[in-house]
Image (tube, rainbow over all chains, first blue to last red; front, side, top):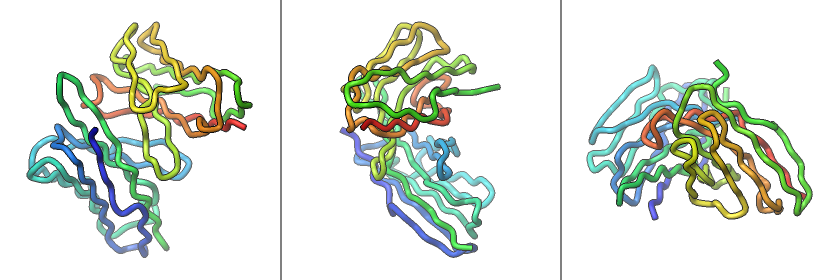
Length: 113
Length: 113
């Protein structure tokens, strides 16, 4: 079945440093979604990428979808303590008339003030 | 606007007991789903529903039952709780299905002793 690998599993950064998490799929994706989960909270939708090579920005966050639609990344510029949490990617693949959304295991970001 | 409401927030069960986790949404979403989240495992799909009267199995359905008698409600039943079902359970809904953003509830933390 479809596998979505996310690295790194953990990342500790000093406040102000940049942070990147990577997502790789074993199959070509229809789209990819990114979620953020604060400690003790629930996943919250951040963005969805659909097109090959797509790049979207939300303030200090930059999301990219690979040309082959098999990988994606989330980059945070100048991290702040409010960025703390676990970031998940979720890849949507289609086949035989059905969709499968597979979550990566997440990257847990700690920001040292 | 309440969004997705899950009850209870916490539950402790003994092995062999049964219970129902409640999920309700007030956004008129057709798609609803249940995930479990375990440390280092990400989010795994248990069951989902694309509309009232329609349910299907996800990645880890064993030991769980669901029904969807109304658009708003999607309860998850544990038939005979086992320690392996200790987890955090999230209900999520979306407008169209897995190709649209998921709205998660606050979660239910379940411990089976």
